[in-house]
Length: 242
Image (cartoon, rainbow, N blue to C red; front, top):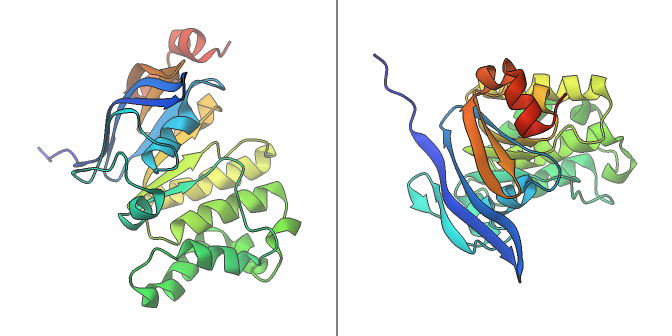
């Protein structure tokens, strides 16, 4: 029998507080190397906070964030991205006055080996040909779908071992979403490990190998994505899908 892939990310009893407010109360999950794992839940369930805590953007109050065998909880974002973990955030956060290519090059800032940049640009342009066509265009003049592609492409420029995607389908037209998810499938096939936070349940479950469901900042359910996709009770009770 073949050995299961090693666990790249393991979160144990994560808690995030904003003063007296609890953003995440108790989240635990694992992401095996080479897999796509979906993080599901309604708006306000704690998905974005969980990803931001993993990436070092918000402080961890309790629990462990173990990445490649090291507890990275409490480390700053710039140190975490250098370890091979990159976040494509909800709302893009692009440098709108800069060109597409300059935004991508900024994503490569953490790289120790600058000679890798041309190959990584080629990789991003291969995944998102639209960005190559628009590479000299100012990012602020692009459509929502193109900005989402750019946000993901910028994250890929740091050559991450783990790519975190926060609500990549939010506010996009269905045809653009399909294109995005085709790109994620191609990345997965090429070996990219992905943790995907998503409100669009069916989309995420079709893309993922395994899924976790959050409710009010807690992990309440986990299992193979296919089983969740085929179980109407799971979707109705935990995810509010009729």
